[in-house]
Image (cartoon, rainbow, N blue to C red; front, side):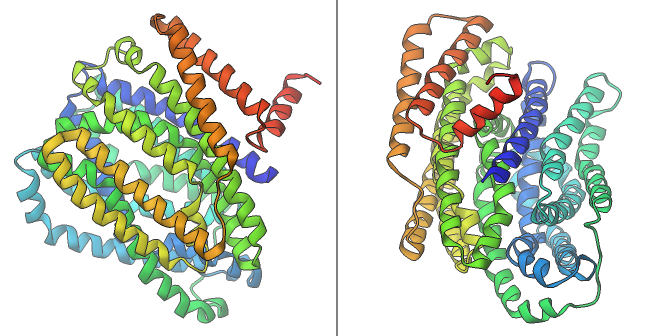
Length: 497
């Protein structure tokens, strides 16, 4: 677990550096007088539609790498490993289908969005280059991750993308480029990141294009095609479900409300940073453990990820919610964005539940039961579409938040139940309840004692007080098996015995 812990911490730090850039970008987007809500909403709808396009273009290539890489790694020399080549050919073929589909469905896009989101219709085709290079980047990242080299790709995706975006925003605000040029350069960002990742893979000697079909491919072809059919469909429904809220808001309420919703979602998504880093690190370990039939190791990773992610998610959520009102005022955000305060609350609790259930998604799609990912994803998509359509119409952005909360909670409950029945594994213990109780108690103590403190001093004192109380409970109750080693490592680096 030490290697996983070390890589997870490094990845988390890099992602948080990315979130610093992201926070700067969000501030510049949301500050009154810089961008309109419509312009900010356009960039975020760009990303949401790109994720949907990527789901179709991917053609199951990234799950194939995650699922079958251990077999290729154990039976083939790197220079004869054709898995990356197969994945890239699949994804480029899928992208061609996306291009054809985007042309065929353009009249539908015009009809659905021209009334409330005309600016999206204007820049519709610029989503395609964004999707192309995002798709290639994600294939290369999956390949690098399975070679247990996840840190640099995570840095590029989480920090590099946002740092380049910061530069583009500065160029626009200083009138060096127009908004039209800004959007077009924004759509081409992943060209740079893809080139950098290619150079990195060449440097570590992990980039080989092999056009001769290996014996492993011949042996696993039937299973790979079966996985494509199920997991590809599962990825489509999962990513459509996760992004249907922004798209629905853009269509029914307009880009201004999309901007408010996306800002609130972004603030709440700070909670998910550790989950994203842990997922990138543990996937190859899970894949190898399933191949070797090591259920004990799988359960160990599953349970530890659950308690660690629950601790971190509660910590970050409470820090956000203790200071949310001051944040709106101190950062001088456009008053319209305050409408999203309770969106942050609902989405934040949704993320706590999602992270508290551990890495059940990665556990399933690297397991022999990977087909269940598709089946549970269909449930998620069905709930998301139905709930978003009706709740957004009646309750706007709050309705979108509630729809996401219900859909993702049901989705996780189904997967938890399946893993428990099928593999006799579940990630919870008495420490789960103690962690929740410690977080709630620490929150209300700080709220009661320091609620009248305002300004930056109030923010700092509330954060420090909550961290002191909550971490003391985590340490005293021994809630995480990784907390003490981490604490000892920090003490050692600081020179304490």
